[in-house]
Image (cartoon, rainbow, N blue to C red):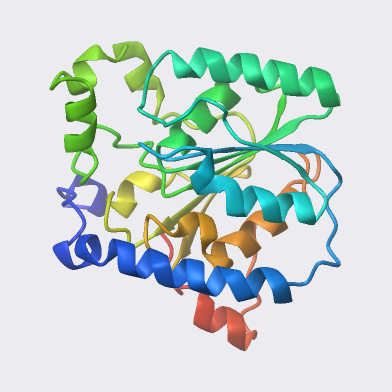
Length: 261
């Protein structure tokens, strides 16, 4: 039996019960990071939409968006209140993407945290000509209705109907890769969703999985994740290349896990 055929379990209880504490530590490290980070890398002003996770809103992504604005990008929240996983939100987001593109006349990078990454990928599938790249943070796009600790919340919001109220064609399409450069960031210490559901089944020239150390709830303020995002945003479709570590760099040996998906 190969790894893909093995049953995928929910994240361990230790990682779940320590989620809030670990996320708080990541935020605590984000505060000094944003003051001492290298701000010489200035963005090109292109628009970046940051989509929140399940039951979160734009407040959760504000620290990341503020940092992106500070280094020269034009960030946007999703503007739809809390993310309750409503299928109709996708159409509203597509309208928002169209409007932002009309305002800037530049292709858009989309960052999606957890469930926000599901929307980010679907936006890119529907508007590939408008999307520069997609970056997902702990997004379970290959197993959104399977074993994870967020399914009970989704069942509660949908009055127990869960996936039954979602278009089956949409559910079947979610695991498929978007036709634009995509970076899937994941953590094996994720206490909410199995990390195996947060990676592309197959990496290609425009699809990469990157493992980090971190909690699910802290990915959006995790300095290591922020470094990856800043590196990724400098690229366009025409010159996009995969994120690479310096094997001889001591800090990178400490900050990044050796193993990959």
